[in-house]
Amino acid sequence: MADPTGMALSSKNMVRALAVLSLMLFLFSCATYNSRIGNYYSEVRNGNYQKADADLEKVKLIKARRNQLLYLLEKGKITHLLKQYDSSNVYFNQADVFMEDVRTSASDIALGTLLNPMMQTYKGEDFEKFMVHYYKALNYLYLGQPDEAMVEARRISLTSYAQQDKSKRENRYSDDAFSLMLQGVIYEQGNDINNAFIAYRNAVDIYLKNNNQYYGTNLPGQLKKDLLRTAELMGFQDEVQRYEGLLNTRFEAVAPPEGGELVLFWENGLAPVKQQQDFFFALTKDGFGNFAFVDPAGSFNIPFDFASTNARKEDLKLDDLRSLRVAFPKYQEQPPFFRSANVSLNHATYQFEPAENINTIAFATLKERFLKEMSQALSRLAVKKLAEIAARPKSDDKNKDTKEAVALAIQVFSFVSEKADTRNWQSLPHTISYMRIPLSRGVNVLQISVSGQSNQTFNLVVEGTGKLQVQNICTLR
Image (cartoon, rainbow, N blue to C red; front, side, top):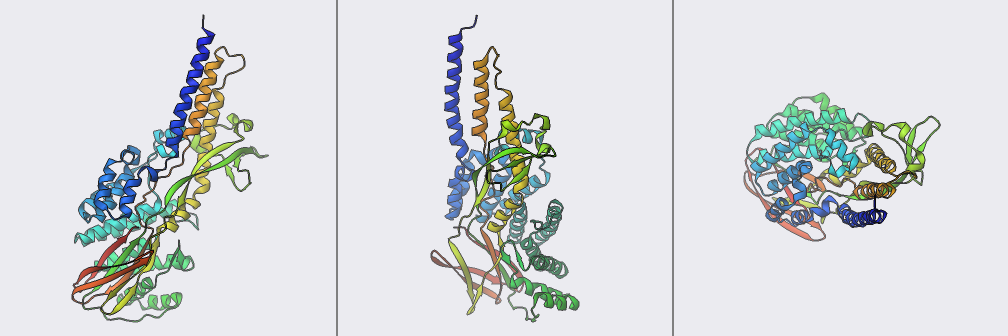
């Protein structure tokens, strides 16, 4: 015969254990990806790259199998900052292969449904894929491997085609104008003027299609000059005249500098980080039998995603799904310490022009996919809620206390395991600007001045060889 007192104690003990466990899980669940890897990013921000690299190796979270891509991206970036360009490309090549091959597995879907998206394999943001090409191309050029850089330039086109196939709707991030501009620079550096012209033209066309502004960046004046100059070099006079009209500018021929030119990229600040925000929804059903989630203010009407959950309409009971709390990521900007920069050389001063605003792209692309991902998150949460309801005891159940404890366990687990995916490649710069500087033959000492919350000046020595060179500088505060 069962001991009723013992059963009661057992249930109470279970509830106490759940309370302790839920508190621990809740505290753990409040931590974002950025806060759990904070030491590494602090050292990156302060320019202590050796220390940052050492700290990165100590973080268990980023070495988890599901975070392998983030580890490769961060290792590629930190070794680039350490000027270990060979090693950097080893990591970026692995990241490249990972992003090409990764697929959503059944276990990933199960983990995302039962736990949260943070437990799924990280596959990378779309703009992060383009940035891998940027760093790989720079690494090859620093290593004196222009042919490999040209291969990387061609791969930018493949990534663009894949992105266009993925984002067929207009007004979505389907191209990266900066990457096409970079592609033109690499082709030009390799003396492939025809492909350089095509790349510059493709980049300009993106700006023209978007009223001369693309994701927070105005059409750079240098890009206009590069397009017209390469068209002139190819003898495409019709294209010169056509784009003079479209760009409202006139082509002015300039003699090539004796020492060649330097295309200098300035990476400033750090990319935004993801935080968690909570939304509250209720499930509704319209007269046609369609289920949708609505928020209290009526701002959102999001369809139930049956495809990603395998849920059945007949299992959905509105009374059980009147209040759902869903955790969703939001970006938080990291305002750059420096706001502007210029370069002085041979009694002339050159201003950087914005070329890529990663901060704006990150915010915009998350907003573009909000409805789809929120639908998946809410549907996932509804399935967990239905599991909790199914575990509740009936009034005539003999082991009612135990079943109530199990139902409570599922309820507590669902609450504390609800967590937004706050991962992203956070050592990317906030913005990238660039300029093209004519060089004298021999040693050129460029004086670079950055200003913002304080002013700093430092020198960059470049040997003028008569060719086009490409370099980058970083101020990641």
